[in-house]
Amino acid sequence: MYDVPELADMKRKANIRSLKEMALLLRTGSKLVWIAPSGGRDRPDPVTGEWNPAPFDSSSVDNMRRLIESSGAPGHMYPLALLCYDIMPPPSKVEKEIGERRIISFHGAGLSVAPEVAANCEKSEEVKDVYTQALYKSVTEQYNVLKSAIHGKQGLEASTAGIALSQPWN
Image (cartoon, rainbow, N blue to C red):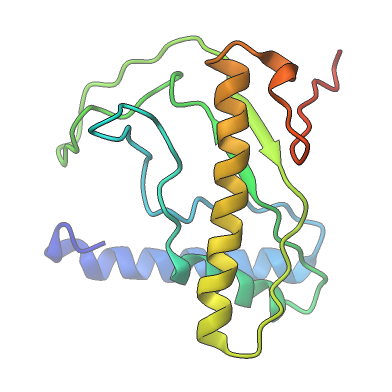
């Protein structure tokens, strides 16, 4: 948000508009809203080259949790892992100029949704961090299974005791 200080106010206003729109969607119920709470594109680890979900921003996760709780309609949060970086990976370094070169390719993608993670803590600051860690742990576990299935070429055999992959169209 503050990488270009002159744009911070504009970005803050855009974020507020987005939150208001999500609140309206959630109040009506029967909506699926996906957020990526890491604040940006995942990039490979500079040492290992391994791709992993970026740590989640606990404020983003907590905002969504509070929006759901105050919506007046039943709401649920499910950890979702999406592995698709081979389709359009980010540039090797962060570029701030418009028109950065992007390479698009054809590749398999993986999507995994885990059971709901419920927030049951008394202290608001405690729930914020514990809930975020639980969601991140679930997404990371799913992501690693997807990596084994797609990049490790294990397919459905990459399933674990806690994460069962399937292809419902087969």
